[in-house]
Structure formats: structure tokens, C-alpha cells
View 1 (tube, rainbow, N blue to C red):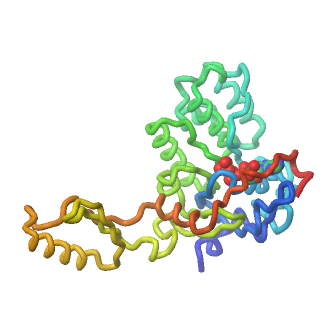
View 2 (view 1 turned 45 degrees about the vertical axis):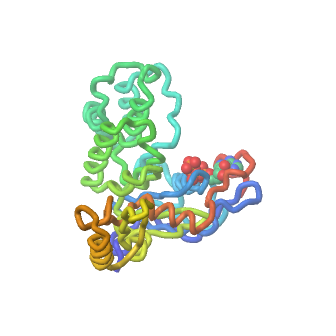
View 3 (view 1 turned 45 degrees about the horizontal axis):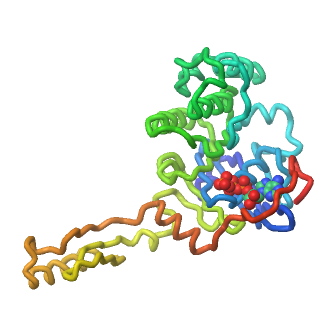
Amino acid sequence: MDQVTAKKAVVSVSGLTKRYAGRDVLAGIDLEIAAGETYALLGPNGAGKSTTIEVLEGIRRPGGGEVSVLGEDPLSASRAWRSRIGIVAQSTGDLGVYTPRELISHFGSLYPNPRGVDEVLDLVGLTDRASVRATKLSGGQQRRLDVALGIVGRPELLFLDEPTTGFDPEARRQFWDMLAGLTGEGTAILLTTHYLDEAAHLADRVGVLTGGTIVAEAPPAQLGGADARVPIVRWRDAGGSLREERTHTPGALIEKLCAEARELGFAKGEPAELEVRRPTLEEIYLELIGANGAGGADELTEATDTNGADQ
Ligand SMILES: Nc1ncnc2c1ncn2[C@@H]1O[C@H](COP(=O)(O)OP(=O)(O)OP(=O)(O)O)[C@@H](O)[C@H]1O
């Protein structure tokens, strides 16, 4: 029994499609996310990640397919359902002249069981900036405020669309720790990110969306299957050229290279710049999207679609 069917699914999607201007952006997506799970949706610009998230949030109408989020159809979901999800959209909204403390307090009052304002400020690292107008916050601090407003209602399911864009490395690490705390409390998270290290660090599973479908889905350490992880041996040969070979038996290759190096009288009896490594998640991801075409659909013309005129 897999992880999702073993636990209750908070997101259950099958055959989701979406067309814009006569072009399929989503061509049949199947997606299941379990309670408490963190799932990272990866894919190139224009692949349809935000579209998928917006359908799950109930702000875009799907073209076709079945969509269930926390047991309801997002398009017709109740007000109570809304209070069980948290949304951090891709772009920071205009938060006006209000301070983080005022905004968190106001948004919190919309939920039945909100977190305390000080707790939220502390969680997102904005305690020092609690009384500064939102317009005066840095880009990264505004993003933290977005996250604060997304978590103040103690969501069971949190949507994070590129949450750490604009964060410095330290802020990103703090953000990761904060999310670990939320998942420890049982919050499920659907995250999009272009940072592969972020996906590797946070996600229980990642899905790669390209060409309108999810072409691979697995825990980060297993993405692409065993073949994608065949070790790479790299060295500089006697002629000075950088060489690279992928092999299931790197030890045997290195023995052979060292024997050759000794024969050639290399100083340390081994080839220069010798290294063995496994492909990184980023390399595996790039291979997956490369093998599946460009994946994006950015040549499409814009059409108006708020909860869906077009499909
Ligand atoms: N209202 C719309 N009308 C027409 N095309 C649209 C509309 N909204 C999105 N698209 C197109 O659909 C495609 C998918 O967009 P989407 O924002 O879902 O991609 P994404 O994977 O989130 O991209 P990114 O990584 O750049 O954020 C893009 O080509 C985009 O231009």
C-alpha cells in the first residue's frame, strides 16, 4: 500500500485538464497528496504548476477531470472548507499601509481557531518588523508576511506557490525549519519551487510536470528510478581532456584508470582530477524535462480567466 492510500488523501485529482486559447496546458493530471505530506510540484516556466494549484484552490475552473480537496469540490466548497486551507500565491498582493501585526490580527479574525499574532510573527521571523508598514518591508520580508497570512488560520492543507523566491540563504533555511514545524503538527503542503535543493530538503515526494502531464513522481532520493542515479566517474586523461563515464561499477573503472596512470608514470598513480559522484536532483530533473520536450506553454496568448471562462 503506498503512502497516500495508507493515509487519508487531502488532495485527490484524476484526469485534470485545462485549455487556454485552444492549447492544452494540463493534459490529464493525476495527483494524490496524503494528510501531513509535503509534495513539491516541479516543472519549467509555463508548465502549468500555478494553474494546477489554482484549480485546487477553487479559483480556476478545470477543463475536465475529478478534483477533490479535503473531501470537497473546490468550486462549490463551503466557507468552512476555505478556513481549512491556507494560500500563499505566487505574487505578493498589495498589503497597503498596514503593519504585519495588524494584518495578521485581521486575517486571523476570519478563522475559527487562529494562531496567536506573536506566535505567527515569531514563526515567520517578523517579530522585529511587526510594526513597520507592509509597503516598507523588503521583498523577502513581504514574502514572509504572505506566508504568515497563509498559516495564521492553522490550515490542514497549505498551498505555497514559489514561497522563497527573493529569500536570502539564511531566510530560506529559517523558512524550511518553520515548515518542518508545521508538518510536525500534521499540515499537508503542496509546494511549487524552482529550487531543487528546496524540493530535496522539504518534500516527501516530488512530481515533475511537463508537457501537460506529471512525467515522474517519487521521493526526491528516488526520482527518475535507479538508472538515473548511476554513478558518474570524471577524470582528466593523459591528453589533458576532461572525461566522464557513467557506470554501475565505478570501482572497476577507477582500478583500470589507475593501472593506466601507473603505466604512464603519473605522479600519484592515478588520473588527475579524479572524482566519483551521483547525479544531483537538478541533473535528474533537467534530464526528465529535456526528455519530455520543452514542457512550457509560454507562447500561448493571454486570455481572461478568473474561475473560468475559458477551458
Ligand atoms: N488566463 C490565461 N490565459 C491564457 N493563458 C494562460 C492564462 N493563465 C496562464 N496561462 C498560460 O498557461 C501556461 C501555464 O501557466 P502557469 O502559470 O500555470 O505555469 P507555471 O508552471 O506556474 O509557470 P511558472 O514556473 O513560470 O510560474 C503558461 O503558458 C501561461 O502563459
